[in-house]
Image (cartoon, rainbow, N blue to C red; front, side):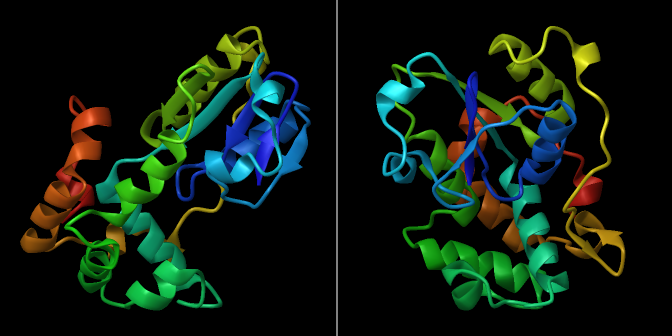
Length: 214
């Protein structure tokens, strides 16, 4: 669900550090009201929230580079007790072969578009331009969250934000996602093309450690 507080609305985009963020909210005693479903995008939230409710609030969400998003999603489902019995993406794209999973995701969206950017864009593009919003990056999660909470007035300084262990990490045999999910060259190039517009817009100047990809 999205969390509506007196200062901000937090939208939880899957596999972008949301569980860690929510734990920090608990440690900071930041409380609010849960709205709609767990991973609701902005248009869906309007069934439960009015635009007027957000006039004096900041909308906060986090994104992630598509290349590592696919790795995390695949490893999460591979290690999940329910396996590939999740949402429609899992039913249609699930595979114990990482590269097949990624290619299935791109084929599933159609028109050569990538699922990772398609999913995250649904959250971001639905936010009206007249509302205050902050888009942080999972790759700089702690610092971006500090900045967001200071800007919306929930904390005064970075010293107010305690450290918390990472939560809900995508592990398989206790190994991080990037250790077990490796791209072949063709799939890697296909992601760069399919999710290219999103990468160009939000990650143009971001250096990716290719050791976590291949």
